[in-house]
Length: 93
Image 1 (cartoon, helix red, strand yellow):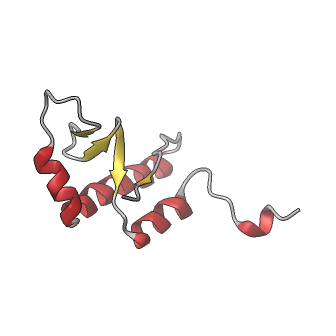
Image 2 (spheres, one colour):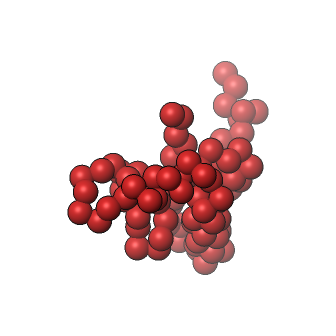
């Protein structure tokens, strides 16, 4: 199974923090629409040693990080608006 993971950065300006919060909410909503992730959610138990857990914000977590569903539009949005996004034109050697 292919898995997409994103590191959500806490940025310092209020606009960037708002963008981070919106991305987190969008990820949690997208998880609810993914049938495979719904199966994982049902299998999660609070006392198990599974890599999958349900976070305090009701998001599915994998090894302590928010699990980003395989949703191309959402992944593209996260990568494009991330604090460390790089455009290919600026990295040519």
